[in-house]
Length: 325
Image 1 (cartoon, one colour):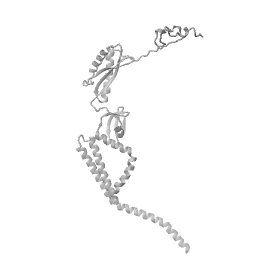
Image 2 (cartoon, one colour):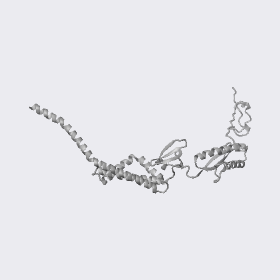
Image 3 (cartoon, rainbow, N blue to C red):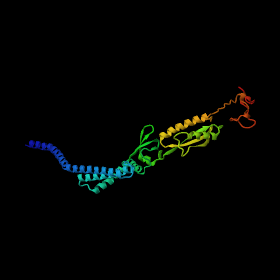
Image 4 (cartoon, rainbow, N blue to C red):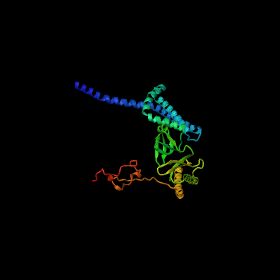
């Protein structure tokens, strides 16, 4: 009889955990099915606010000044869309979890916001810089800019980064925080840009004549603007040439600038050479002196590094006090 009682106790201990697990799963399933209506309502609320946000964004795009895709319209539309979407999320959470109040959400966001701010500092910095770039518009899509070591055409300005296409056909993604805090050259900010090049002529050439030939050539090149007019300045006196700086204005687009630079340099070279103007290149003269040679020459008539005076020392081979080998 005692043995049978022990067996019964063992069986109950084996069945109890299984019953507990089944009970737990049952409660979870019941809770899930009870929460289904709330989940459905929350989903509907989220979709409604999502549609409202899209509608408000579309309205803002239409009513803002300028084209539909203007920067200020994009920024205001995104901000309104994000704000409406967040409100929908908060209401959906409150429907699913009735115990969660607005105060609870705000306090939770306050504590969590600090942690999120530290974790996503760079992202928020780029986001803020992107919003400021879109609002202030220092440049627009289609402008040609230089940022750091990259030069190209702006494809798009987004809230996180700016996309540019370099002149060799590469896409470069530059974080907005870098563009906003570092110098950026907007090449096409104005309708025209100035190019320049130094042309060297010989010291024996007539400077004014060379300037006249250059100006006549520049005025005959299509694409070089007449206002402002090109000019030529005597710039430096080089080691082997007098350098004239030629300056001219063209359309700001790089394709036009490069094309005209090629034509200007080619025609200047042909015209100056055809007119007999010397286009010298650097030359260097090296003099070698062997002080042991008797034919070294008269040092009183030489200037290349010999001691000064009327009685310089004689070459080594001509000195009596030096024994010859």
